[in-house]
Length: 320
Image (cartoon, rainbow, N blue to C red; front, top):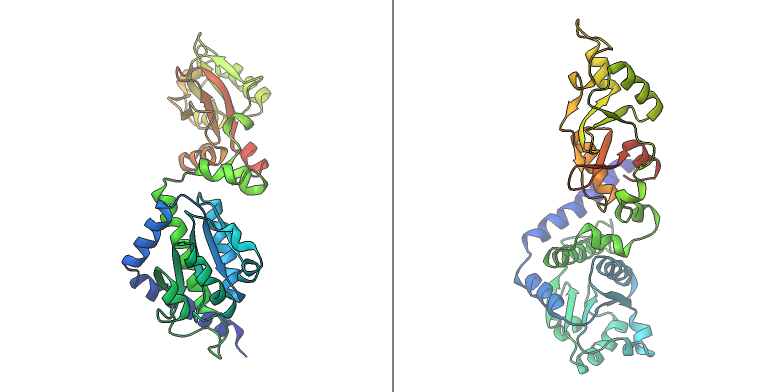
């Protein structure tokens, strides 16, 4: 049995399902986004079985990207948790058939409280479809399951549409990395999106030399500083240039090179700097990688040196 071929066929079926669905996005999707944006309450997602699992993930995505949201299981709703829904809320109910028994039982109660209901189903004429104020179509041509029974393509499509809603809401709210960081302060994600330059930059014993320093003395300073670079500053501690061990190696190729020369003969003038130590460390890493540098000098608005951030520090701290 060729499992590689089966896996490829499965992915192709689900990929084609998403591509076809993207062509069918209509005004209903726009209205759903506007409804959620204009609500003053929470976005509640509900569903049972596989739809419930997808709904729980959707709610988690909404909640972590700026839309207050939680998942409500229909069975628990029937036993008191309906009280968690209040005026101003919006409900997304998921059922591929639109006839899930547990879900159908709570729909009249949701509408009794005049709560806007967005249905995600394949059948607009189903029980869910009829109770919904608007229906986001999740119909698929076929499931990836060889029996065309197990929810595969349909759950993938539903999850992807949930992601699309979340992304639309993020863009509408101008949700930024700094906002995302406030919801993810811990773990590796928190390291990327919460830790700032000021938390990691080196501020003490910086290898700083003056403009009239000789190359031989700069080499000693590079060795002492262990950054592979020295910072060249004027009498007011304003950054003027950088001299790296790479600059010196390139200078050695010159026939008239002398270690008695002034460092400014070989230094990198007007180097890349950052005057915002509140910038996220992950953004600093992106800047370092884009500019293909090893060391980012942190200054104030007047170019006075405050510290340095080395790419090795970022990597060691798990920033990626």
